[in-house]
Image (cartoon, rainbow, N blue to C red; front, side):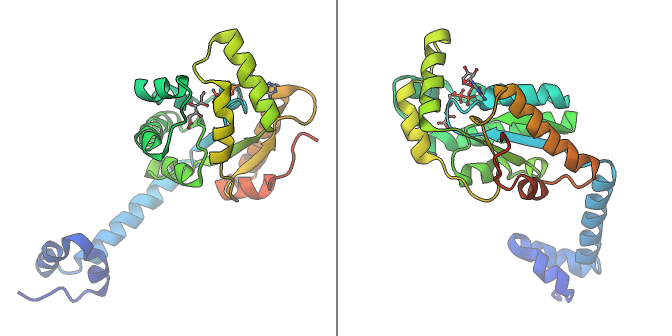
Length: 244
Ligand SMILES: Nc1ncnc2c1ncn2[C@@H]1O[C@H](COP(=O)(O)OP(=O)(O)OP(=O)(O)O)[C@@H](O)[C@H]1O
Ligand SMILES: O=C(O)[C@H](O)[C@@H](O)[C@H](O)[C@H](O)CO
């Protein structure tokens, strides 16, 4: 049996080298045909409409991600996904008992959250997520499926004192499971890189409501110029303090 002579084909084979070589000997130019079909599918998907608007509001406990994500979702007419709803009982108990989650605890949870966002976004053409997503690699997991790859990350920058005060107050008032003593570990775990749009939650008057309007204005400005994308969003906000 002769091996496939198509150069593109040899670059495609990888795992299925043997089987694809056999197929290519039967169907001439199979690899080129497959590549063309794939490119056409991608193109037709893009032509169907604007890319989904996927925002992930993230940061340590108490930064306001649940409040801000809920208001953003309402304002933008999109579903909201709350990552806390996807923690299993063991993880909730661990945190309630005063122990921080580690990478292993968070790994399956991040996949569940990613998949929930993907399915909500596929139905609604976008979604707003509230998720701690403290490390860069956690954010990469959230954006790791085809349907979530356009996810834009909104970081709510908040001082340690404010975080502690908000989490303490919330626990007193609502009996929320997350204890204030875990705020330190949240801050130690937090990693901020260039792939985020950072908003300061403590500057200016108007609290969470005004903050949401700033975020919406930035997003809509890019959308109305047909230039919405996560990198364009980061460049526009560029870590600037938006609550001046
Ligand atoms: N910008 C803000 N200004 C003042 N208070 C705020 C602001 N954002 C949120 N809060 C208050 O802080 C508390 C924590 O907010 P929220 O539950 O939204 O935070 P979170 O980041 O989702 O926390 P967690 O991840 O622990 O659930 C709430 O009582 C909320 O009303
Ligand atoms: O990654 C984590 O450590 C968790 O997601 C926490 O951030 C909590 O669930 C949340 O803050 C409580 O609401």
